[in-house]
Image (cartoon, rainbow, N blue to C red; front, side):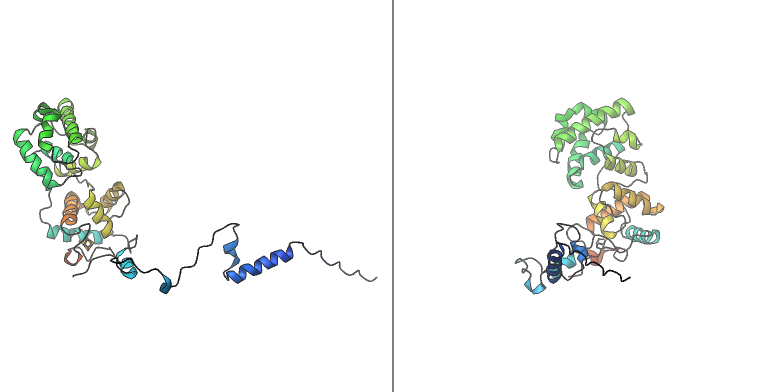
Length: 290
Ligand code: SF4
């Protein structure tokens, strides 16, 4: 028996429209159709040819130079303990006396000076404390002066009213809870008004020799630039430094990094050609000799 010829398939009503749509799309974009899979996905416009780009604004560096001065967000490789050890040996060799630039003669004077130094220069704090400590340098004496009396001595320092309030309250707590002495534990220090983690770290390290690492603006910058302990937050940098700094340098690492940041690795124009740790620094944007 002869087999019946197969019935021709019913042509889809959408087929011609779909075919022409695909043809239009492939003419406009020869890239694989996967880009167009998501309905409504926006296509990124192609970058214009370099010759068609808008010229740089007058006075600004050319595009190529701008991209050269903008370092990549990630460093080539993370620091290893041997490289960190070389870096701190070099810093210790050029900074033989890594110590605070604040003037103080007791843990209490240091505590007050560090509270005052928030968002102020060490120089301005020293000028104020020189007069203040000649008049009052104990919790009892400063408490007796009160906020108004203390303000007379620290008026030239930023945030003076808040700092005066915190210092007087701290003096009261020192007398009530610690017999007028500065406590040597982080918990007790951080319980004092105006004392945060950074101030506690400075006091623990500088007054009591604890291997803590306070991260200020200089330490934050140097740790990130060099690649020693990159981090987006102060705590991230602090933890990274505590992991990588060799034990024998832990006590002085804070001052080594601060002094290096102040004198050499400055924010605006780091002196890379004269830098003692240039060989270990991983910053791709190092400055060149003039
Ligand atoms: S080489 Fe330059 S960027 Fe690196 S630590 Fe030294 S001064 Fe800072």
